[in-house]
Length: 621
Figure 1 (tube, rainbow, N blue to C red):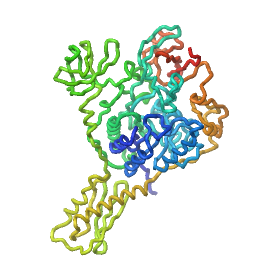
Figure 2: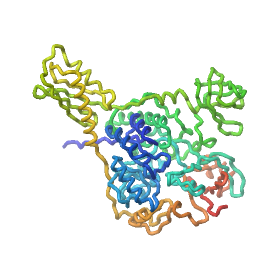
Figure 3: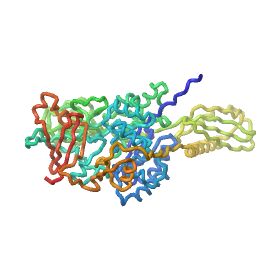
């Protein structure tokens, strides 16, 4: 009995893009897919893109079988439903592969059968929620960043055929799954509408219920950045098939660097998998530089809770939300215009340097000139001797990234032959399995005096300016003379036909059917379910929900306080004051408060699940 063949599992490196140029750079640098903001209703309002720009990215991506996803992941108000329906129809017509959404009202809109992905804002942290969303018709689930490998594997085991997407790099939202209302409740700017004010990056003072200051002016909610470079293999084995980089507001250089870095890692995972995995897209990328995530903006790195164990400390960047960079030496003398330093790295004119002043504040400056151990800052500085200097902008590195021209090509095999004595045919087949044949009639074709195979091969090899590179070339045209200009024209026509064949045979995914009998995980929809329109309410009613609390953007809560954030991160643990440790007993066991100006949040520690909840006071006090 023949052994049943097992198809390799496609793995996808998913890159962010704030605009078309960044998206194209990501594809050329090795991304298997990009996600970018639609013209409206994306959770990064400043990263919106026109339909024409999205179409331009699609034209570059699809020949490689790279995907383009559009984010329509804000909540939608009732008076916007028709606009969103038209928006989605335009995205579908343009050729977008899928929408990333959080508003369940979209599943009740009059839209084309476009594939839907459940955004991380859907708060998918267990198999029950995952199963419901799968039955609702989602083709992919974007998991909560907080999940461990074991928790990811549990969801995969419960839903083995459901593609799972997980974050591997970039900024972290301190709230579980980005399920946060702090910005909206304290300042009126809703993250669910793409306008997060990032109050988690502010400095806060922590005090107890009696008003005693425990920690003063620290960035208590500002987490380090995610970096799971060493865990890609383990994540794939746990069931993750899409590896997502955060950063739709990041600059092009950041995206190119992180994509090139993780593309190499994913290639190694595939190569070492024994045919278990393949890359989702085709083509070989050459970024034109040696990638290094340490060189791009970061607040220090963490793997977060992937191991399943809560780190004792090191999750937060308490001193500053800025990128400090890497240490490059210590100041030995400073007289405002000249800094003398003992350096451990060679600095260059234009580098960005920084240091922590005597008040613990991180200060930065640009370096006009570096002359050995003498540094000439662009602005006067007053730095205490012994202070560590950090480089948070490497000018030479940035220049190398900016000037690097990433390329991506697919191999194409060519077969040249004669048909009927006066017609030349070229058959092309690329690594994606796409084929095309071009023919050209050449009157009066004659036998050549000199060998022809070598010059013809040189002409067929000239694929510069295309997305192809020559693979195997089989020349069966014999000793006949084919003018170079005609052969060049034939090759070009063959490439054009091959690209058309890609467009004609490209396979789209489509929206899956919804199981109307599926029951939601609760008969109550809370503010965390973000019901902001009548279609969303109808969706939940269809799935057994009988009680509703609308989204806070639609109706402000009348309760004395509102839980605006729930986290797996714990201030007590991060500050070495966990209640389960001796030092934790030095702080009172009760509510605490963090304040910054008019922002005041009550902190409730949930020791049973080793996390915390944050509340706003709705009374105005």
